[in-house]
Every structure is written in C-alpha cells, then in structure tokens.
Length: 300
Image 1 (cartoon, rainbow, N blue to C red):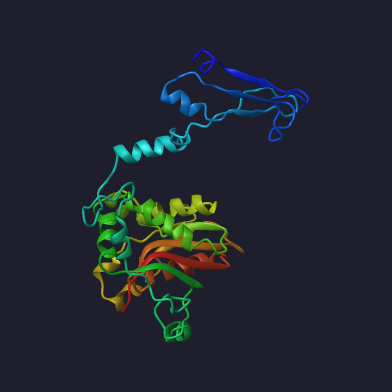
Image 2: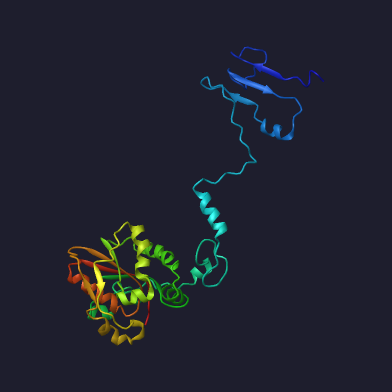
C-alpha cells in the first residue's frame, strides 16, 4: 500500500532515461498523483502533462469547467437597470423589458407601402411622382416617413403630444435616425411652434424627436434659425382646404442658409401645409434642399 500511495515522478532531461516514453519528447515533466484526494481536486488535476516550452516553468492553467463566463463590466449596470426598472408595454400592458413597447405591438404599427411618391410619400402604383406633385410641386424636395398615421400609432403620437409621454420621443427618434442615415444634410431643423403654443404644451414634440436624430447622425440641431411668428388655430381643427391659407406667412427665418441642405423634422404630415410653408421660408433664405423627415404620414 505504501508503494501504491507513493508519488511517482519521472523527470527526463535528454530522452535516455528508462522512464522515457516516445510519446513525450525531452524536457517534459510527467507527474502521476495517486494519493486519495477529494472529488473537486481530482477534477482540477486531470491535466497531468505540462510542456516546458522555451524554458517556461509555469504550471499549466487548468480551466474550471464549472465556472460560468462573467459578464463584462460595461454590461453589468445595464442588466441591473433592466432587472430593477422593467416596464410594461404602453399599449397592451404586457411586460416589455427595457423597451416602451413590446415586440408584438411594435409589429402592429402600420408601415407605409414601399411604392410611394418620392416627394410627398403618398402611395402611387409604381413609386412614381403623384399627380399633385407634378401639377403643383411643393417647396420641399422629398419626404421620408416611417409609418402610416393609423391605429395604434395615432394613439402613441397623441400620448406624446397631449399626455406628455416624452419617453416616446427618443424611442421613435432612433428609428427616424436609421431612416435618415442615407440622407445628405448639413443641419436638422425641427418644425417650430409659436411661443404661445409652446408655453401651453411645455415642449415641442418635433424638437424632442430631432434630438436623438442629431446625436445619431452627428449633425447640428438648429432650433433658432426658423421661428413661428404668427399664432394660428391648430391645423387639426381645420378642414384640409383651409390649412394652407391658415399657415401662410407664419414662419420667419433669421439666418443665411445659402447652399445648405436642411432636414426638416415633424411628428405627423397630413396635408403637408405647415411643412411646405416652412420649407418655402427656408428656401427663401438660401436653402439648397429641404428634406422632410416625419414619424407618420396621413393617407387619404
């Protein structure tokens, strides 16, 4: 038993010892441990062969298969916040993790058809310009819209504007930034509100949507070059035919925009009268191009 429980160590220096096996080249240390040890130690000492390469006498690093991979330090705060601040979907009330909407409700948002007029984003048979843009070209050059203004998106836009659900602005703003990734622009201009309306609402929803777009695209957010100088009734309260007259000469630009390409941001485009009047004002002050970027487009 003493012989059985003894450590047997064979150290070969030149490959000529009797204990040398062709399996192991010179400068290999082989150790067999026969002492009874606990199961955990036996698991950690499975690797009995250690190579001495380039004179490195370090013990081999024995992996612990029971150890789970640790999360990086950068991920830990986010995981803690997701666990502590998990929220419910704003639409259906089901758990949505760290997002304001759950995946099924996001999938229910109505997207615009692929075949749309490149100028005003209204559906056309083959994606050509619509008849209105051909007969009465607007002052803006193109329109990019994410969704159709229909249920349930209309409820979300109303919650943002009238119920102060400001968390929706960066949520949709990131999607708008992805939509605008290929647009050539020099600055971002949110559609301005009149100071009276701004005091009533407390914020400009177009400006809140534009903030994450400006950060993502690394473009300046210009909230001062264009102002709304005439207080008018809300466009939503007027018939479509009266909206263009209601908004006429309502904007004033103070900057020289010669050669600038403007990305004009708003939440919803219905008739486009407000956006068109603002684009007209910007082009009067030298803007080369005005591209509209809106969250939703109302379909006729």
